[in-house]
Amino acid sequence: MTKKRRSKTLEKAARAVKDSDEFVEHIFNIARGFAEHHELDSGAGSRGVRRSLALFDKNATQLVDWLEAATERGTAEHEALNAISAQFAGLGMPYIDSSATRTWLQHAARASKKADKQLQGKKLRNAPRFAAEALRSTFEYHRLKIAYQASDKKQSDAVKLLCAIAKDGGDPTVTPGQAREWLMGSKQQQAS
Image 1 (cartoon, helix red, strand yellow):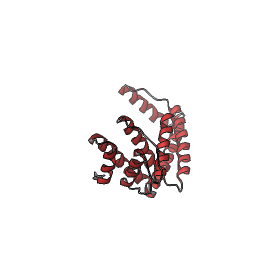
Image 2: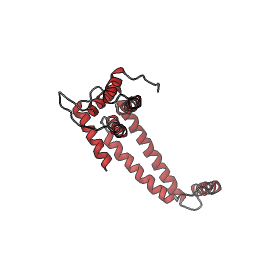
Image 3: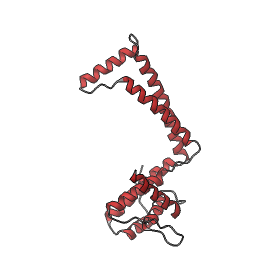
Image 4: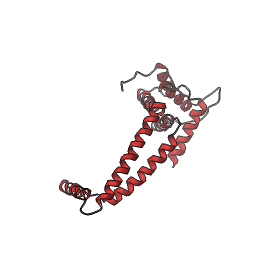
């Protein structure tokens, strides 16, 4: 990914909150991260995530089957697993119990199926969540107060910045009300 030059509008919005090169650079980094997440959130990106989940499910299921076959003495899989464990011992690494790995893979395969079903036909919303959490951390780092005002006439600095970050990152549809909700959600996320 090529390094995109950030807009003067975003820089102006950031400097209106705090006139510091470090703060502005943090905001630019958040916008860059928002753009990357937004790319994944869009249709093609979410299809890629679903394809990746399906591939994980397929491979996890095959590996569970292989580990199941490796429990039977005299099978090629059993001998292969013994050879792997010998290599682990030779490297001084701890051997991991194959039944625990098999259980983990079974749970992970089920989780990937559930995640895939949740993503069907939905547009992902990771970009605003990422930006809100990063913006909250940046405000805390710079000892700035986060306010949630998002009326038609006046918005808080955090709400304005989140909207500017979203616009710069490729999503001009984020409204002050939505920015407020994402910021408030990041507060709850941080508390848990």
